[in-house]
Image (cartoon, rainbow, N blue to C red; front, side, top):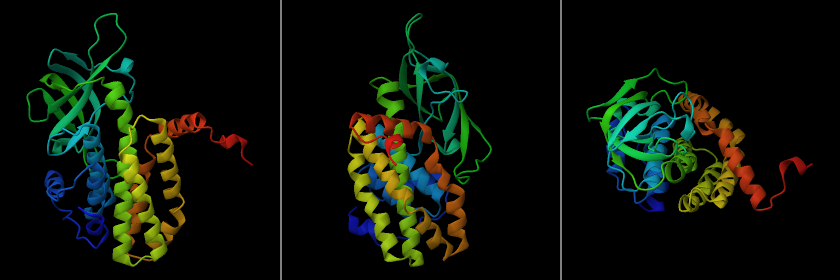
Length: 300
């Protein structure tokens, strides 16, 4: 789709659709790449939760361009821990056994990316990334209670009992789990900015604010094409986050002049942009030091 199509008035996809049907309808629109999928998803989403889902799915496809159709999830943490040495899920041949804390989209997810340890006894912890289909034997997605953030997007817990899988090429940690956080941060931001822009079109927000929102999207498009593990990517994403955060007061003021629903939804769900904030700040600080930016502690 062209910028011309993405920036004009668009009708939301029905919120009442089953989650997998909603995403299938989004995929049928023919987005050309992950960034376009995130922006289009944000424009067609009736809630910030659905915009988040679109951004998350777009990030998965940037991470793994060969991803199947349908909703997916990257299931990494175990007992709220993420380091390879803390994981107990194991790959034995082509079979996975273990558990994961979190499955975004819950039972609506059709496929899952699962990092699992595969090192030999006595070796340093090593991960492979494996894909399982939720309809296959031994793949159990257990429903979990709604979260305070984006409660319209279900989630679940994962149990694997000698489940058949496909192993992806590369190192599960360095090539997939580590870079995904950056990809998710970027694509979710693009989707939520697009959702806000759509609300602004509908509610007649000041043109200055609409243009400021739009101004973040070309930068996001460029960053989406960069290697996610590159320090330059982390630094540019940090600058994009600051650009968006500077609009906070203007967004609150604009939302307060329109239907209460939009303001309530945004206040409830905007915290999704702060998930894993500590790791994001750490990456940006390391990148700033590498490129010689003035440390914040040295500024008046």
